[in-house]
Length: 174
Image (cartoon, rainbow, N blue to C red; front, side):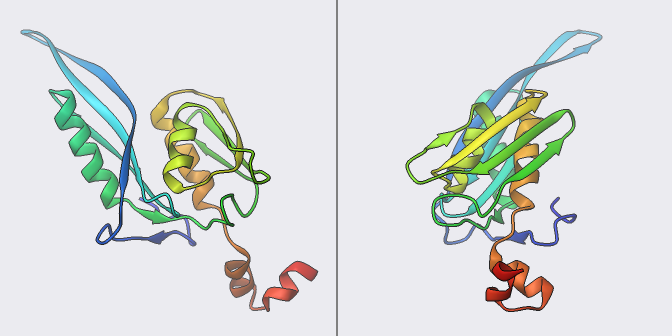
């Protein structure tokens, strides 16, 4: 799922204190010969609030099992996000489908200035000070994936120094 991101570090769920957050539940309808068949799809974000986060989708005929399936799916897709204290290392834009998300690091004490699905993802990661703007589609599925796109593109100074083959001091002097 995260193959296109070279800095994405996949994490195993064992030993982590993961908290799950429900982003949204949708009632879906399948029209059949015998009438309408109702079901539910749930999107969930799990995270340890210390840089590890994952998202999952579950579908079922009832809400509780859809959420349970989504949590299990999210635990299979955990990634580590580089943080700088309680904020982000740098500004980043993410997109998925028609959703566009811009996340910006903020000064200490600012709080999470984000709405809906973006707030849920950022809180699960453990970011406490951030500004964000969601544009385009407000579909929670696409907004969550756009937020993940932005988070997975984040790199800390150590990773940049390693990629360039230079020392940490030279990264800031260049």
